[in-house]
Length: 298
Image (cartoon, rainbow, N blue to C red; front, side):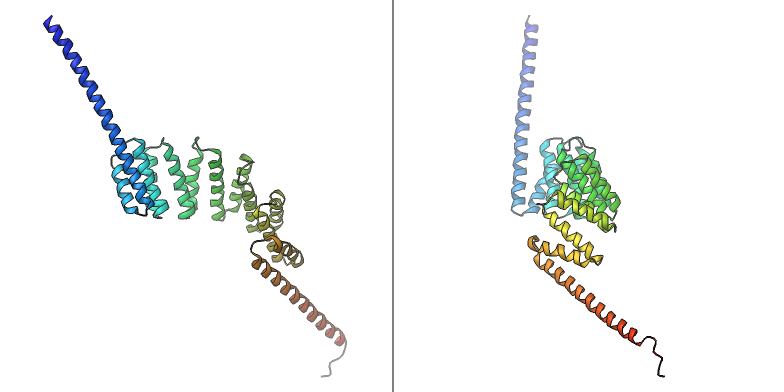
């Protein structure tokens, strides 16, 4: 009986010790998590004050722990953002965003990191081919919402546009319109299609596309810009009268009135020069006509 009683007591003691240890672990983990949160808040305060070096030291001390804890992942993400948005150190920003994606591919911040990577290549480094590659990775992520998906396709089209591949750019713009007919980027997309045609030298198609912008989005600022581009095409084609009519209408509504006024004056000078040149040609032709058939005195 005595032995049995001792075994029962021992089991109870082991159970209590386990519970005490478990409680200690929970308390320690909770305290540690709160400590890390305070460090992240401290880093953000330093960053907001412009003390970027201090913020970076804190973030790096946190991420050195290498854990799946969301707080550590956030520290890694914020470290990348600090280099990106505050220090303009894009290689460093890329390094930490890539690290986050590699170590925590299923975390929500991996998607944000991938978006930042693509944006850096497009808007900052201007490596458009690499940007296309990185944006395409985003399109395979199911959790990307509709608005972001529209922006991604638009940015891919912009990359092709910047590379001078206007044909592929137009295909991407068309793909965006077909997939997202109610996109918030509609007016921009139609305008870029027209601009691509303009740069390809397809002037009639470009004018028709600019007309679509004007008719579909009459209150959009791009509507006036489309009119301006039509006038420029007509001017380049020496259709001065038609171009002048558009410039006169634009002068009432276009923001940069000085530019429009200069265009009007330039066309008027060209028209006067053409009239003057025609008169000179007519006078010269008349003189030749009066002398025709007369033998030379020499």
